[in-house]
Image 1 (tube, rainbow, N blue to C red):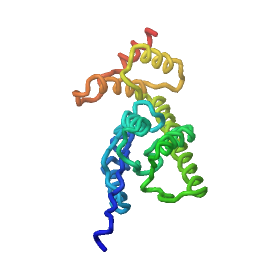
Image 2 (image 1 turned 180 degrees about the horizontal axis):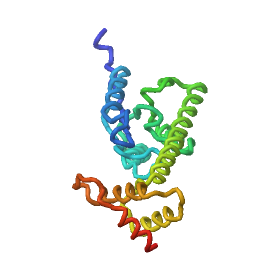
Image 3 (image 1 turned 45 degrees about the vertical axis):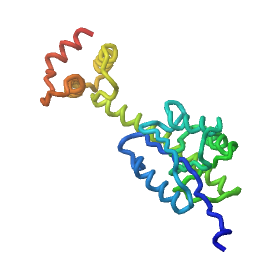
Length: 225
């Protein structure tokens, strides 16, 4: 009987990995470990790996790996039948959930299916699975919006306390900030000292000393505005 039994080859799969920051909980090795375990249990072998490290999931811009993956699927050069992704948020946190669904549809139209290894609807089809997937896409987008709002609020509070929260301090920014503080009755010498100290630590990171900006310098600077 054995001679009549055919050996079923494993399903060829590609894995897509993404993280937006280096300290993210779902790191690349963690995602890869879950995906490889999923592939083993479902008779798959990972033959291609696409990874966007340190890339935002809000848009397709600057996500070279995902762009290459979609191109390979659409032009017929893909040598795999399945794309394995850790979860919906790793595929993307697109603010338009239809965009996320559209990229998945492009793959399905080319007979390449996307499977999310850590989602409760994995392996399921039908209306319920589609509803759960849509909810997950909306949750991924909303998480990004809430996170951006919290960061903006924290930066505004830090700036009001005299800390510099942006990139390299340019002259117009410094002058504007000093003028604003000078016109604010609640401004204090301590807040300005913290502000100048932050700039100094940015410009001279090797100096492990306390800020040298004195009240005399601050007052003389303000008098020239």
